[in-house]
Each structure stands twice: as structure tokens, then as C-alpha cells.
Image (tube, rainbow, N blue to C red; front, side, top):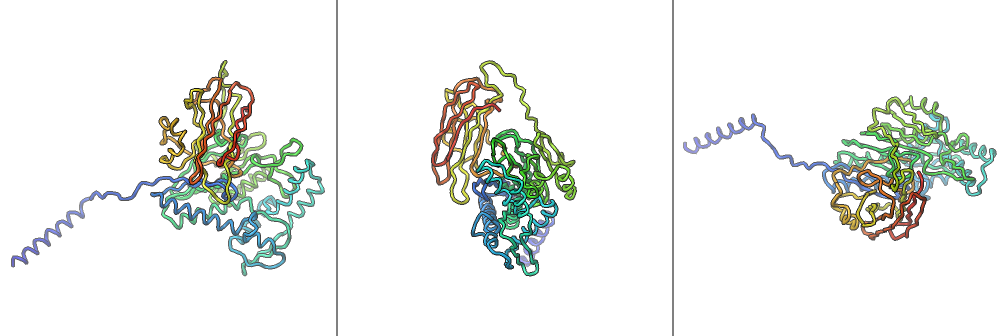
Length: 506
């Protein structure tokens, strides 16, 4: 009886506890870690630079995401690259008039080229290389191409180069004209790599930037600076600043590459229908929900007339664009302000004082990092200016991925870390025309970290480079500031292929 009563008493107490607890909000400690943005930098990815920002809870997850992204980019490159003789596309290119079974990605990309060639009246054409070669020859000989040469090249480019059999999954190569899958294919690869990471990891968001084309995906909003086409340095004031989420931005322009013939600059962007370089537009940035739409339109807007571009854009209601013509005028879509974060004003009206840096001058630090075979991590780099007493006066650039690794930049750390606010460092992504890997220009406008112009005199430029599993290098060079043009070539080392300092008028 005692045992039975005891059991009933325990049961009633247990029942009371359940009823009571069910009516309370029990504080439970959140075991989830706060998300952090991990940043990866690589060079020589699709022939340019690669940046990936991964929003997740651990470095382990970030490394998994990074590996998946790089593997997918490599896989697609092995299929679609026209520069790799062993890629599937290059092997198909060596066939003719024979149906060949190919990967679904080749069918998808060539189908997109058919669509965009039709949408742009031949402006988007993977056979543009045959016309571009005429201009490369002209640059080598310094003789402008004849009308006959250009007409022959455009006729060759505008043939039908393939036939797709969707039912059997084959494509027949109909000509021997070289084809290059540029234009929007980089955007296509970024899109696939980003979606692959999002589908196979628990990361919250990704910002993937390859050569200035950027996809922002997931629970992440990114502030993106659009490079000024009339500026040359990575730290120049932006043309504009936008903020996007779950969208793609592509920028195309004629300001990074081209042909110099008899002291006249000709754009590398060629109109395949006329054979002439496109020079009326110097930059076009397009924001869209679809990656290939953004990439194709950004290129097309550099070639087509403004009227044609604006008419084409009406077919894509989600698209926002900013076009800059050769006179520096801005042409914006009606919805551009909806993505614009800060409208830039780059006017400097500082009055020159005697003995002070003249704002008409600037110092450009040209830096070419050493290149290696295949993809490789970009080294940590710091560039800063000191006065003659070796007192730091201006931090121009600090590249790192985690604050704990700043100690690896030994000289910079000793001189600058005490006054360096890590928390205030906001590194925006930059959308720009594609440039070669490892080549950077950094400018000093003559101001100190307080925004004041320094006095004339001698200053010390410091360039520190350290690579994981590589070497440590430090370059220091005195340079005299007396508001006169001056150029100094710096010695190369295992991490720096070339470097120079140049003072000149803006």
C-alpha cells in the first residue's frame, strides 16, 4: 500500500510539473553560433581575380564552400574554355560537319548565344575573334585595316557556325571559324558555382566576384562599388555605389584593354556586324535577377546605340542599368535609384597652399604580383606611406582575410596596428571590366589619414607582401614630393613581378 501511494504521489507530482512547465516560457540557451563573413582571394581564376565572401558560422563551413565553388568553376572551365586545348569545347571545335554528343552545358551555352545573337541583331557573336584578329594585326603593323579586310572578317563571323540537335544531345560544327565563349559565359559559370555551394552547404549567403562580375545570393546584402571607367587605380573613388541581394551585377567597358595604333586607342570590344571597335560607350553596368542576362546586356550596351540598348532593356523589366558614354555622361534606367546606395561626387575643390602637395598631382603605385600556374591564393599585401621620421601618415591598402593573420605583415603591424581599427574596415566588392590577374594600381592623393594634404618633402613608400607557404618581402623606397613629375622603377622579388612609383598630373 505504501509503495502504491508513493507511486501515485510521484505520478501526481510529475503530472503537475508537466502542466506547470507547459505554461512557462523556459529560457533555452541558443547553441547556434553567430554568422561571420569569411573572405577568400585567388588569382588566375578564369584568367582574372576571384573573391568570395561566405556568410556562415565556422571556418570549416567556409572552406567547404570555397572548395565546392572552385571545383565547380574548374569543372565548367574544362567543358567550356576556348583557351584550353583539352577542354570539351575545344575538342568539339576541331570537328566539322559531324554530329557530336556533348555535355548539356555546351548545348545550354550555345543555345543562349543563339538567343542573344537574335536579341541583339548579331551584336553578341562568339565568332567576333575573327574580326578582333584583324585589329591585332593592325596593332602589330601599325596600319589600320582596310574596308575590304573588315568586310571579309564580318562576313566570316556572321555565318551559321553550328547546328543543335536537342533530341539526340548533339551539336554539329559547320565551319572552321575560331569561336570564343566570352560575353556572358563568366556570368554563367559564377551563377552555377554559387548555386552549387548554396545547394550543398549550410552557408547563409555568398558574394562571388570573378573579374568584376558579381553574384550576391542568400541571406546577404552586399554594397558594391562600380569602378570609374576614367580612373585607373583600385582605390580611386567609385563611379557609383549600389546595394543588392539575390541579384547579379556585370560591368563591361573598353577602358581595361584595347589596341594602340598610331597613337590612337581602339577598344577591344568589336562590333561583329561592322568590324569596327565600339567607342561611343566606355562603361555599362547591368543589375539583373538572371546572371546571363546581366552579362550579355552589359556587353551589348557597349556596342549598340543608346536607343537600341534602351529598347532592348524594356524586354527585361527586372533589369537596372548605368551607362557612361565617351563624353562621361550618365544614362540610367528609371529604376536605377532603387539599387543605388550612395551617389558619388568626386569633385575636389581644395585650394593649393605654398609648400603643400598640389591636388593636381597624384602618386600611382603600380604593382604586379608574381604569377603561378593554375589558381593560387592572393598573398597578404600592405601599402602605406611614412614621413622621413618613419612615422606612418597614410594607409593605402591592407589585404588580409582574418585579423589574427595581420601579424604576418610584420613591418606594417609594428608601425600601424596600434592605430588601425579592424572593426571599421569595410571592404566593398568592386564591379568593373575584366582585367588580367595580379595587376593592380594604387593611388595616393597626397592626403594623410585625417584627410589633410601633406607638405612637400621626402616620403617613404612601403610595400609588404607575404604569401602562405611562400616568401616574405618588404620594399621601401624614398620619393621626393615637389609637385613635379617623377617615376621610379622598383626591384622585383619572388612575390612581386614588377613595381613602380609614378608622380604625375591627374
